[in-house]
Amino acid sequence: MPRIPRRARIREREFSVYAIVRCGGRQEKASVDDVLTVDKLAGEVGSSVTLPAVLVIDDDKVISDPAEVGGYQVTAEILGAAAGPKINMIHYKNKTGYRRRLGHRQKYTQVKITSIAAAKSGTKAGASKASTAKASSSKAGAGKADTEKADTEKAGTAAARSGSASSRKKD
Image (cartoon, rainbow, N blue to C red):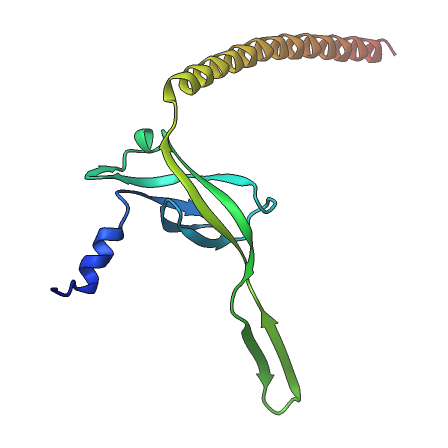
């Protein structure tokens, strides 16, 4: 029986779909069922989070266009908290007796990637376009009302100033 090199065995186990996700200021390679250690995330154990994808590799297809990558969702489940290695720091100043010993352990969260899937872009895109159109029209209407209100206030203050100036002249 021929021996299969280790590299060949590793290639067989690679997933056909993986993504580069951004989490905590870093980018990580994520495929389904991977456990990643990322900077501390807010959330309880067992809750799911969505990580933004930067690049998606789907079989031989590489997707890097932000418009297309935005259509993919990388969902992860929070497994629990973890702590990094202890970092010891010592401050010392010669001939003064000044010594300080400090220690630090960075807090991390372990997440398990549950799915990498294309989002339903038809329904969400239409809804988001409609909501932005409503928001822009309401902002435009509010802007008109604000400018009219400001114009009336300016006219009132100008009249008050001219009235007080004429009363001063009489005195």
